[in-house]
Length: 180
Image (tube, rainbow, N blue to C red; front, side):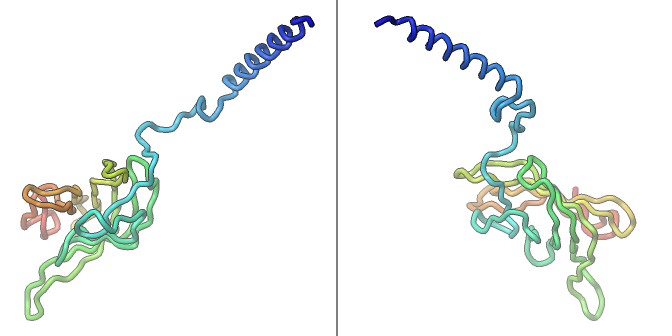
């Protein structure tokens, strides 16, 4: 029996495979796309802590974010855009609690339209989460303001929490707390 038909068959198969590979390379296959996926986009879902402290209770696209207790600013009614990307942002309402003097003293909220920005994706135990948060709003006096927080463990602490970058001080541009 002659081996010529087998040799011809092998040559034809190799030629077809080579031609097919060239066509796929020219058209772009999923792994050779003309638009590769961004290297910084995580493969796993991205989460955020919507409450004050801890690793548990992380969610995606929270409706509200509480960065503290008892008078801390609260972002509510959030509508998210670009969730899971290196920078996600939302619009909503920011309640800032100002001290009130007088016969009925206490903390009373003032609501501001707000843009919330989340960024700095980190991994912990195979879970991706945002670690930096910025509230941007316009003060009562028409001045742009920002409050920045990092989700981190403070020295001597054991659990992460939202920690304001800088210290609060009296006399921000709208007469209330500012950041130094």
